[in-house]
Every structure is written in C-alpha cells, then in structure tokens.
Amino acid sequence: MNDIEPIIRLEGVHKAFGNLVVLDGVDLAIRPGETTVVIGPSGCGKSVLLKHIIGLLHPDRGKVYFRDQVVSGMTDRQLVGVRRRMGFLFQGGALFDSMTVRENICFPLIEHGMRDQSELDERCREVLKLVGLDGDQDRMPEDLSGGQKKRVALARAVAMRPEVILYDEPTTGLDPIRSDLINELILKLQRALGTTAVVVTHDMASARKVGDRIVMLYEGHFVADSAPDKLLAEGSDIVTRFVHGRASKQELAEIEAAQLPNHDEPGSGVM
Ligand SMILES: Nc1ncnc2c1ncn2[C@@H]1O[C@H](COP(=O)(O)OP(=O)(O)O)[C@@H](O)[C@H]1O
Ligand SMILES: [Mg+2]
Figure 1 (cartoon, helix red, strand yellow):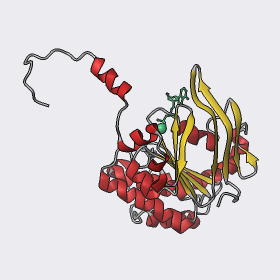
Figure 2 (tube, helix red, strand yellow; figure 1 turned 30 degrees about the vertical axis):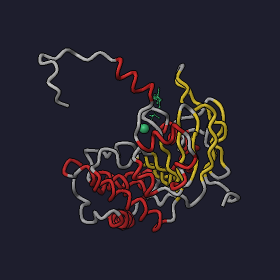
Figure 3 (cartoon, helix red, strand yellow; figure 1 turned 60 degrees about the vertical axis):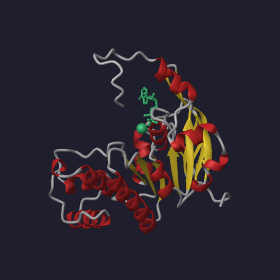
Figure 4 (cartoon, rainbow, N blue to C red; figure 1 turned 180 degrees about the horizontal axis):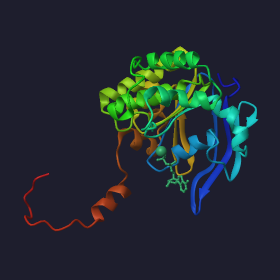
C-alpha cells in the first residue's frame, strides 16, 4: 500500500499566525481511495490543515502537492482547476440562506461552467438521492433540520464529482443518531464514488467508523498515524487521553486552582 503514489502530499508545512505556530513542519501523504481521519484538540490546526490542502491558506514554508502539482503558492486563478477536483464540506456546513436547496447545489456547478438546465437538474437530483433528499430541491435552508442541512452541504460538496472530499467536522452539533447517519453517508459516498477523503473530527466514534487511517495533530505535529484499531497500541499518553476523553494532571490542576464564585448555600453537596 505504501508504494502507491499519494494524491495529496504535505512536505515540511509550517504555518504561524503572528507568534502562534499552528503547523510546525508537518509531513503527510494522503493515499488515493482511502479515508484519512485527522483528530486533535480544538484549536490545534485541523481546519488550517484542510485549508492548506485546498489552497485557501498558504504555508510560510514547505509545500503542498495535489498529484504532481504544487498547490501552495498558486494564485486563485490557478487554483480553480484544483478546487474543481476537491469537494470541501466546511465546518458548520454553511448553506446560502437565501437560496433554495437546488440553487445551493447548482452554485458550484454553474461557477465551474455547467450551464445546461436539464444537466444541472439531473446532477442535482443525483446527489440529493445519494443523501436521501431527492424531492427537497425547492426547500429553503431555514426549513431544514441541522442534519438535513449537513446532508445538503454534503450533496453540494460531491456535486462536482470530486476526486477528493475534505470534511471539516461533519458531525459536530448533531445528536448521536444523526451523527451516525452522516458517518454512514460518508462511507456510502466513498463506496459509490470511490473518492479519497480527509475527515477532520474530534468525535472518536466517527473517526473509528469512517477512517481507514487516523492521524492526530497536536502542538504543530502529527503525534499518531495508524489504523483505527491500532491507535491505542501506539501507547502515546496524549493519544490515549484524547481517545478516552481524559484531561491531563496539569489540565486538572488548572481547573482545581481556578476561583469559583461564592455560593449562598455553602456545602449543599449537590453535584
Ligand atoms: N486566519 C487566521 N488568522 C489568525 N489565526 C488563525 C487563523 N485561522 C486559524 N487561526 C488560529 O489557528 C489555530 C488553529 O485553528 P483551527 O485550524 O481553526 O483549529 P481546529 O483544530 O479547531 O480546527 C487557532 O488558534 C486559531 O485561532
Ligand atoms: Mg476547525
């Protein structure tokens, strides 16, 4: 498996915002057809990482490749071709509120030059079918539930038939059942379209379910890279605590030391 040409490659990518070093020289090779899950604490740079892949952010040092093209340093104009081949499900799955479901889905298609109305309708129906929402073309985002909005955003992300789909926290804010539906959809899309996927999440159930491989980003570096069932066997304390959702002694001490406001009824003992 390892000798297969990666579809996306990061080489020594360094990114800082002012004094804050977010990516400290990271290397990552994404293999085609695989679903790579990126885990890591809030604010560790997962979204920043995805934005480098799609060229919304550029590294201070290092390079990002899509196949044999260097994405880092490309102008927006040069990036059009690359972005056509990648779908991006943004964190929050933002839909355009003033547009119908159909218009939301057709937007990127029209941007990329598809003009024929019957072709647009056909593609729209095809992707809505994939997410179980065919027939909802004329609804407005405000009339959809959170889970339905994510599904429309997903449909929009795959409408261009991209080679790669980048998912930024696709299940955040959804209850466990709806999260699982999204996980199933990610798997279904991967099987139906054979796409390569990068899924950013801090939902471990989701990571295990959809991932062929899990990498963990922490303090600017990848601290784990393994198959989902081998993640804990790697034995790193950071990874183990993250997977089990346990704070470190230092983090607990910080909470302990924090001042709580005085209560009128001390010692009521209710927790
Ligand atoms: N455009 C930006 N300008 C300044 N700081 C940013 C920018 N984008 C992200 N950051 C900072 O970089 C860090 C990583 O952000 P992000 O990748 O969004 O984290 P997460 O892992 O939660 O997705 C955060 O501290 C965030 O505030
Ligand atoms: Mg994020």
